[in-house]
Image (cartoon, rainbow, N blue to C red; front, side, top):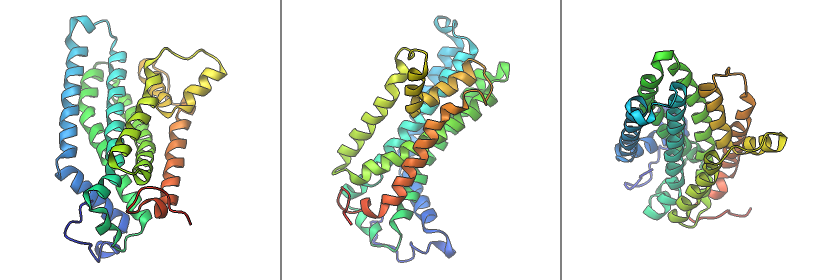
Length: 274
């Protein structure tokens, strides 16, 4: 959050008693969107979805794809890109402000560190919401003929929100303890790459071991759930246990972030000892 004009003495109390985390979230979101980064990312995503939709809907080479597979692919791309941009924003949220010299002004206000963490987390999640809204008409175009698009929208919203929340919290933790913004962004992207790589590999062998490994990776579990609902046509309740991993990540990472915020959100990277 840019505070180049100096610390605001009323920021901690908020506007008319508004919770301080909401004030932080609003100002962070304003910087993110009006600064141009959010709109530029969504424009690039809309171009990607336009190309993907055109190829899957009209290209003769891709006509072998069934409609369910096309909708499932579009939903997976929407979730993947939404999680990516959310993670990048959160990875820049603290370490980036350190390097730009704006974090000190924010820390000098009366805003609690936990409120700063929650506000930055909420602001980063607005990128996922924006990505989801952009993807909605494309999912409608691909799935309208068989009334699949409502399921695609709901499944994408469910899986994407849980994954984005968990990885945004992880990104904020990495950003808080990193010695530089470059380190934070690199570590966050490597983590995301490690989580997404198994989704591009052959399926794990059937059995409890392969199933356990798939469920432990929240990204793999989320993508598998989208496949089950949108491609295989299973009910929402079937395989719902696959989302335990993403939900656990969101709760665990969010809890650690809020609990550790007073120690890790500081002018220098690292964890301050008690």
